[in-house]
Length: 249
Image (cartoon, rainbow, N blue to C red; front, top):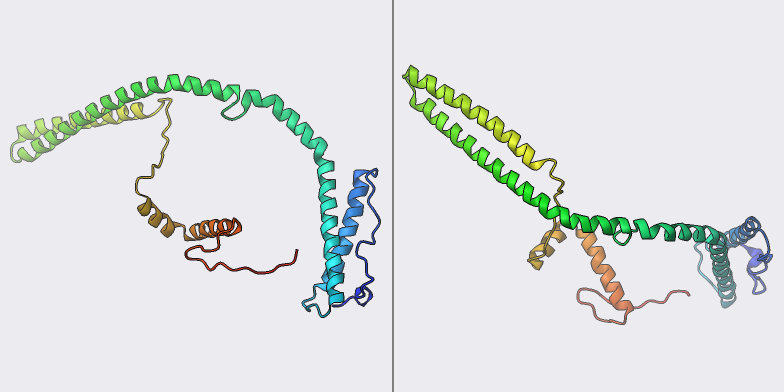
């Protein structure tokens, strides 16, 4: 413990100039900052790695800690007071706009949701029809390709047959291009978007997979749940050693 001038029980960490509520905000901040900075410097002198050797020293450090704690509370109160006008302004603006654009509850989102409920079935019907047509054209193109390939194979040594097979092959290629255009038309500009969802159907398999993928997050989650259980009064948690320890308050 370095500070010889503050090692007696008479040391009073609270002996600082009071902060008046009628002072300007900048003056209040400057005063509380000076107070906390001074107390912090004093705390650094005490917290030098050397343990407490006497009850008197314990009492001095306890008063110092209480002083820092109380200064922190007053600093937080000043912070709240100083930002309250801004909070009030922000709330007033938010309250004015919320009825219009609040997510899911404002008029914009409510109207869009209601209209989407009308648009989606129709758009899906049109998209399904286009997809069915694209599948039909693709099947025709594939059948033409298979037929042309077979004709090419069967035309070996027969020039006339080979010429006809090449014509079939060109027709098949044109059908493939048509199928590609049809597919693109069926899958773009539909006014729909794909939303992927996951439905839990086998808990243990999902548990094993996620644990292998994200063991750190899993461990943190289990630790948090165990901490919550212990704080609520549970004294036996499978897989954990539950114990108590004393800390300064």
